[in-house]
Length: 108
Image (cartoon, rainbow, N blue to C red; front, side, top):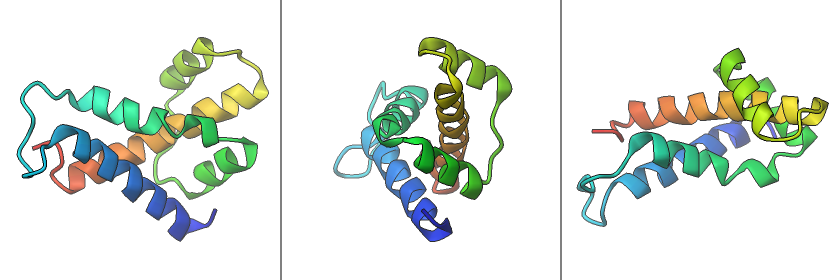
């Protein structure tokens, strides 16, 4: 995955977040939760996060892993080296998608 492919992934996940927060007319859905939408969209990508994908995410991400969140995410799963890498990649992807949604006023 190169930079443009990573950018497309972030765009695609941001689209999912915004899509779960808005109806077909583009209006905010009452009661839609920003955090749930974000975690759900990025979480759905986790099964595709093999070691090479995680490394590519970390190489191309604008964000840095959040240590506390990495520990929390890794603790939810077996904490081997691959899970640590996946948790780091998940946290940076979560931040990059969040920033992209915010830049598009998707939380408005």
